[in-house]
Length: 243
Image (cartoon, rainbow, N blue to C red):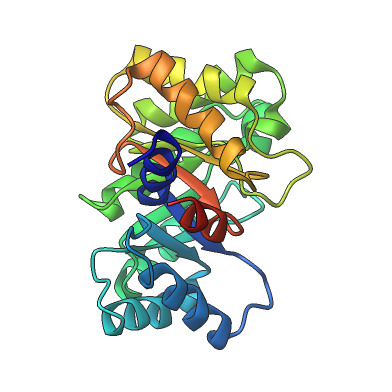
């Protein structure tokens, strides 16, 4: 296998194939899951709104892709400061069949001076998830200041996040290599956890930049589906065409 084909195959296995369109129909989710299950290399997960979790799990299982996780979002996209709401959303999503939770950290409240609410939210949602992965979205583009990106990343990791994730993809700024570097360096300092780049990643070259960065900071073999994800909605076909 050529180096380009190997890279595309590796990125496919790290992909969270995403449909977070607010008006997505059940048919669109069925199509997403059919696409996810159709290739020689399966993505790590599909990521959908909570109301589509049951449909996604059913379609993936029916298509012979039970290993593809169903991820969903909570406290999304606003990142409110109501920990009780986030826990309830998490509990309902898991009961519906979600295997992974992407939680938006209450970053506005943190920037406004609340240094305890985000930690409590992550802790309580992680307790609810148990062994199932909790990915905490810090909205790095909205935080802006890389020192603040590092600070919020460290809070999320200390509170039990299994992954820290750059962005919801719903704000003006998505993932950037600069924020990704700050987040990966924080992971390296604060122990075992994963990283997810999301927001504005549309091409193989975009995704490869983040994989290369992870290799530089964490080691070339570090990026496995258990520790590294790329969240994207339009990347699947380009990657499969390259394999």
